[in-house]
Image (cartoon, rainbow, N blue to C red; front, side):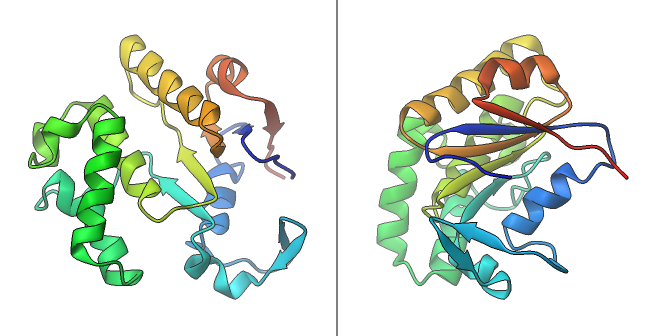
Length: 188
């Protein structure tokens, strides 16, 4: 599998085919048994993937902490795991929220947000670690057509900004609309 900088690669195929598992492996969230990952011409040590912040992950169900505000959801990881100062993290988070049209929601809690707003908060959280790639797991699942278009627009805006993205989806029409390349994955 190869993806060029600033491009969108969609992974499509039936449930159980390993699309999400592949994305989770690239993020360092699943163990890789064999093979290698080459990034910018260099082999990436598999046991260091999680620490490299190569891939920022936008989970299908967003995985926002319900007891934390939007702002606190965004700054938790950079402060705790990357050693970023709380002030620097807040400044970056507020900038991302503004860019994603959520500036007025920094103090809100996840329960008060729409599905599309939660999606954008999850994207902002993924971007907080300065990843080289953003990975989305089923970004349009269970969204109505209006929110689906909002997610499509957001992904395309990120491409215009030069962000490399991998999208796992069952929605072939969505994949064809947003993708530079589509990789079909089939279970054995």
